[in-house]
Length: 454
Ligand SMILES: *[C@@H]1O[C@H](CO)[C@@H](O)[C@H](O)[C@H]1NC(C)=O
Ligand SMILES: *[C@@H]1O[C@H](CO)[C@@H](O)[C@H](O)[C@H]1NC(C)=O
Ligand SMILES: *[C@@H]1O[C@H](CO)[C@@H](O)[C@H](O)[C@H]1NC(C)=O
Ligand SMILES: *[C@@H]1O[C@H](CO)[C@@H](O)[C@H](O)[C@H]1NC(C)=O
Ligand SMILES: *[C@@H]1O[C@H](CO)[C@@H](O)[C@H](O)[C@H]1NC(C)=O
Ligand SMILES: *[C@@H]1O[C@H](CO)[C@@H](O)[C@H](O)[C@H]1NC(C)=O
Ligand SMILES: *[C@@H]1O[C@H](CO)[C@@H](O)[C@H](O)[C@H]1NC(C)=O
Ligand SMILES: *[C@@H]1O[C@H](CO)[C@@H](O)[C@H](O)[C@H]1NC(C)=O
Ligand SMILES: *[C@@H]1O[C@H](CO)[C@@H](O)[C@H](O)[C@H]1NC(C)=O
Ligand SMILES: *[C@@H]1O[C@H](CO)[C@@H](O)[C@H](O)[C@H]1NC(C)=O
Ligand SMILES: *[C@@H]1O[C@H](CO)[C@@H](O)[C@H](O)[C@H]1NC(C)=O
Image (cartoon, rainbow, N blue to C red; front, side, top):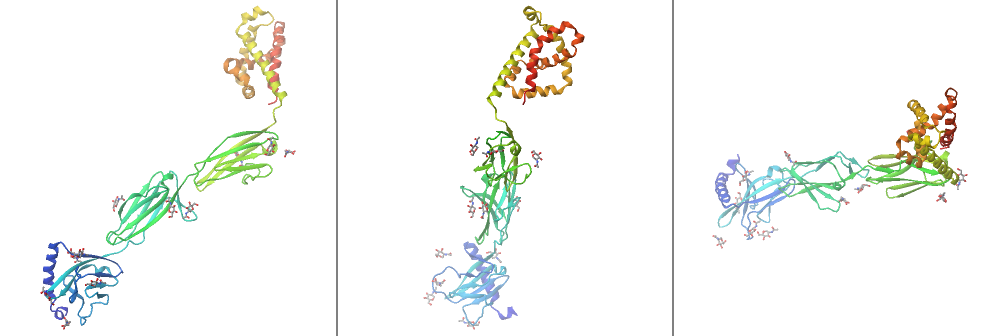
């Protein structure tokens, strides 16, 4: 069949064999790279002179005729044609076209030129997967600060593509994150704001040089954190400003003020009673003309962004304004109290001195009664609460107590002691009458202190 029809082919093969040996030895040999489904032209040598008749063969196990400048020999397939009298033009490359080709030019003598054709394809679709991230409505990805994010990119090509990752942060140069064949992975542990930017996966066909890339913008979001006073005080009819400072939020948080009362879900709006101002990520709520019924209670500052919600409670207490008379009264009673305490202390620790000063005050007996009261106090927690309340109000007294810790008990007892004495007065007899009289003065002071409105 073919062997009979094309008698010269065995001879050609032999010639080609000799030729190939020569080319390999010479280290030459044109290499042409075509792309799948595209056209390609193979030159018949690198010669600029006018060309003689040319015939093209493909070299498989035996040479296969393709096309000739002799018009009476039709091309093997319509895809093959001669371009510019000598070059082989192949349309619609397929993978099977990859191989070795040779052209024969007949002038005074016959010359052979060899061309190696390689077919490249791709890279095709570049598949990028970035996880775990969220997606904004506009398609942009975001990752939480501190999270870890896996980046995977793959593509296919012939030959297998080199896949590489690049990173471009804000105002920074593009950074190379490494490459690999076909699939390129990396993980960023602990995402931070400086890792926010554009991540580009680039797939390269090393044979054709063709590239394909996918760029993904990744934002690094941080949830808000809140800073605020836990409690504020407003005087009746006055104004008070609550401040709420958001930090670290990206994207910026929306800051709302809520009132945890009848409508805990409805944000407070600026109106004749409330004034809300925001400066950057700091918001203030001013409450005008404080009233105890309406305004006392919890206020909630809430900051929310895509990463989460934070809330902080602020307790507002509304108080009567202090009046001068009250302050003076307080100071006077504190002074009296201080005097009483000091004299009581002096008497307690210096009975001898007491005897010298006068027989009417029997310090020794007071000390005895106090021991009794000590055990009583252990059972009564209430008394300690009283003491705490007093502490809050009476700073002067607190100073005295801090310096003389023992006196705290002693002072608290005097009142009790008196009560005990009063209760047992009859049994104790007239001998204690003096004591009662003398101790009535400090007692009245103390009672006054405790009953004074808070
Ligand atoms: C063709 O040959 C010329 C000189 O003979 C050389 O400079 C040129 O690089 C060659 N071109 C190719 C594609 O080989
Ligand atoms: C055609 O070939 C001639 C010489 O063989 C060359 O000078 C010319 O540049 C070629 N033209 C094209 C379009 O390749
Ligand atoms: C062209 O090919 C035909 C058939 O093989 C052959 O008879 C003819 O001599 C060839 N012409 C030239 C100019 O080589
Ligand atoms: C083409 O020739 C080279 C040697 O020059 C050889 O290594 C290669 O395998 C050949 N290709 C094919 C498809 O025969
Ligand atoms: C080839 O033939 C041409 C005339 O066609 C002639 O001028 C040239 O010298 C010849 N070359 C060789 C190498 O014989
Ligand atoms: C998508 O929205 C975010 C936040 O609003 C913005 O930073 C980003 O640039 C947007 N991306 C595109 C592609 O519009
Ligand atoms: C990321 O790419 C987008 C679109 O090309 C561009 O608007 C944005 O500024 C880039 N971001 C960075 C950090 O380079
Ligand atoms: C590259 O891929 C090979 C296997 O294909 C894998 O063993 C190697 O870990 C990869 N390197 C990187 C940096 O991804
Ligand atoms: C409270 O604020 C309002 C409005 O700013 C002001 O008119 C009023 O004088 C303020 N009241 C007090 C007690 O500061
Ligand atoms: C109001 O706040 C307090 C303290 O934060 C909380 O215990 C209570 O459940 C809240 N009530 C409502 C209705 O949100
Ligand atoms: C402040 O509130 C009281 C009632 O709580 C009201 O009588 C008074 O008119 C208010 N003052 C102002 C200036 O709004």
